[in-house]
Length: 118
Picture 1 (cartoon, rainbow, N blue to C red):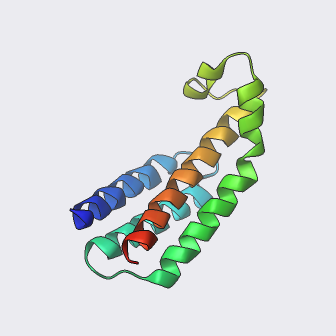
Picture 2 (cartoon, rainbow, N blue to C red):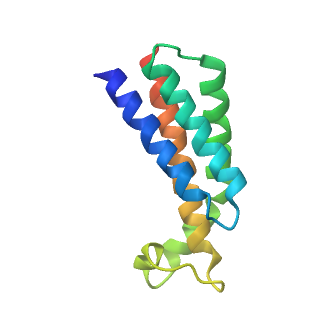
């Protein structure tokens, strides 16, 4: 079961990476999601790498925290549904909130992989 979940996470993160190719700032996000996909794929095929897992976890968590102040702006906005709408130049907190949450999901995936191996 856990290998299946690791494989599902690997596929999900690979899809996330592919989606980011057309993003205005793709390099960070393609690398981050690809790295998470590799961590999960290695685990799925019994090739767990603790150093890589902890590195991707740390970078993901740091990235999430870097963009986290935008979440407070979003929560203070009058329309929380904007998070699901189109990005607007006058509201960069929308994109930064999405980025913070995406990086946090990546950190959670890596944390799961780390914990299941201990």
